[in-house]
Structure formats: structure tokens, C-alpha cells
Length: 141
View 1 (cartoon, rainbow, N blue to C red):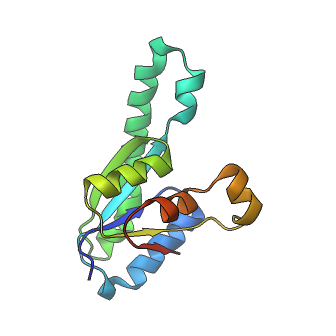
View 2 (tube, rainbow, N blue to C red):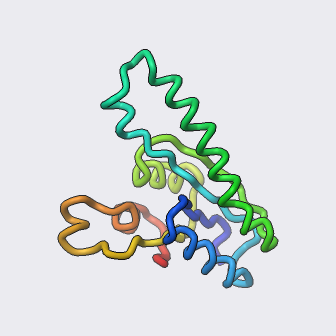
């Protein structure tokens, strides 16, 4: 059984369903999992003047921590002992970075409905990016 499981989370319905699926299969999971929330600051780099970027990053980090703590609560209530990670950046790239740095053995990620095909080719999807870029197994929910 994999010991290092990464679950990227956000406030979407897909992420909620993924979390619920993991919790429902708790007996198959280690009690210690890693929850990752990525605050996408991609537009900040293009739209915010340099002088204000630090202020925006600090606010984004504060908000991201609150969101991550809220998203961790159902796991904690179910008996998991999640490690919480917050990254600022582009979600796909941040997930890949964490997978490599933490030597993750399994990524469990939700896939937003309505994706696939031409949409993924033109606009990409975080789950699609992760599936094709990481060197560990990925479980799509």
C-alpha cells in the first residue's frame, strides 16, 4: 500500500466528491495523507503592478490557508491525520513539484465534468496534466 498519498483539493464540487470518495474508502488509505491546495496566482504576474505583488501574494496565502484548513476538516473528522500543504502558483506545475519533492507514491485527483477531447487539448486540465506528467500512479475520481 502506498504510504505517501497526495490529494490536491480546492473548493469545487469535484474536489468535494473526491474527498468524500477517499473518506468512504478510509480502510484502504493510510491515516496520514497529504492535502495540497494551490492558490493560482498566474494572473497576478501579468495584471498586478510589481509594487503591489507582495501584498497580493500575502493576502492569497492567508486566504489559501483558511481554505485548506476548511477542506481538511472532513478528513480530520473521519480520523485522518492530514498534512496540509499550500502552494502559490499554477496548479498543474505546483502538483508536479510537490510529487517530486515529497516523493509521492499516489496522487488522487478529481476530474471536472465536461472536460476531455478538444477542450483539454486547447485549454488543458489540471488532472490531464498531472496524469501525463507525474512518474507515480494517479487515481482519477
